[in-house]
Image 1: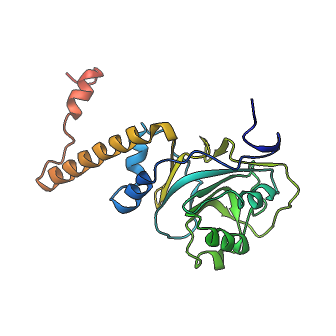
Image 2: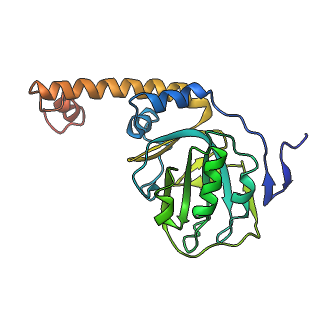
Length: 231
């Protein structure tokens, strides 16, 4: 079977990936969706943990994942990923819990902006935050640190990675806002969006009910009866 990547294990780079239909990104960006709706739409799964958060207030972001696996204290693979990203992609970086160094700073982020990257997610740290916050790229990470990494490898681009406690595959739909980040598997996008729309409508109906004075959650006692708590 012919390889669809260059290099070898530990230094593998996949130039082409399957990306979702751009209509889903457009829908997320133009309509009133939030990451909680998508998380609920996936039964609370595929939601990155609280450590992956906005480092500064920024617009929401959405796009296909270009995945980068870096060895702790190294960013060779992130540099290599610049050859493969397309406008609108989201770079998602695993650092193997290398929290003592920054995987990138303002110079690399300026390159991402030139390439049209829609956002950056790092399960680790960045640096130069005083400049990055004014550059316009949404950035989600665990924090900042001043130390920089090496460029020796190993590392991989567009292979499955771990980020924020979940698996991210290249081409998965990434959506981030002030609440956090969700990763929608490519094959589940249509179902997730339908579920998110349903949850959004339910929440809007519940808010309207509260405005009418319906304070107690409907069906609460039925739930407790089913569990044998009350008669």
